Amino acid sequence: MSTIKADTVQPKDFATDLTLGASGDTVTVAANSININKVQDKGGNTLWDFSTGEFVSTQKEFASPNLKLLTTATISGGTSISFTSGIDSTYDVYIFKLIDINPSVDNTRINVNFSADGGSTFMTKTSTYFRAIHDENDTSTGVAYDTGDDLAQSTANQKLCHGIGSAASECGAGDLYLFGATSTTYIKNWYSTMNVYYPASGGFSIECFTAGYCNTTSAINHVRYEISTGVFDGTIKMYGLL
Image 1 (cartoon, helix red, strand yellow):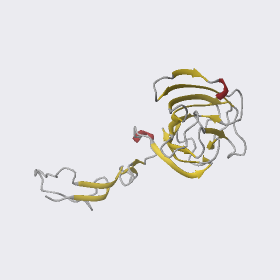
Image 2: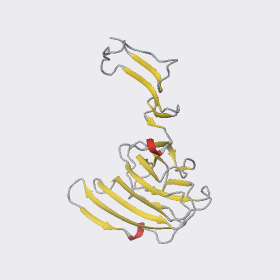
Image 3: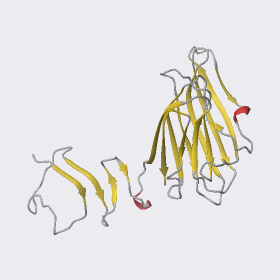
Image 4: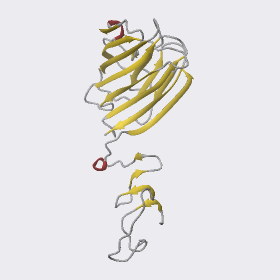
């Protein structure tokens, strides 16, 4: 049984076509034996790049239901991660995935802020913050609104979670959705959900819910994630959603 491998699959071209079998013949290909790197449309535009596993077409009519990964930022022993490129009118929604955020100092938070001038100043925000808790001993549970963690027309950093443990196995993870980032008509809504290991009384799972808006019609071009104390390790991925 033969194996067919190709770098690119393109529309029919009589000058270069490869024909398998004569008219009326049945050609059988074994499972998993056709290997291609790219699929292109009739105009030669790449729709799917299998070498990266990403949908790469910019045409909305060919849009994939999956997220488009735009940037992956990994940090080791740093204080902040900033996203300063790739935020434009191409995408209606930007989604940030925070993965294995591990601070150097116990009970440390990860914060976010937004800017329209490359990080020179930060936007005025109004937000809400509440959390659900459950300890490992199954003795302490609850849901509460935290008035000290919300913002009211403030340019300060927005806290995304309660304090994260600093041990090698302790971390926090979650996501943040940012809507209409480059609109010059509307305010900028966002919300975040994170779960963290909170290092108190034997350990807590704390689910943190934060949401708000940047009270401006200026386009966002800079998103910064910053640790509240010390330094941290972790990965943050930025995705675009059409």
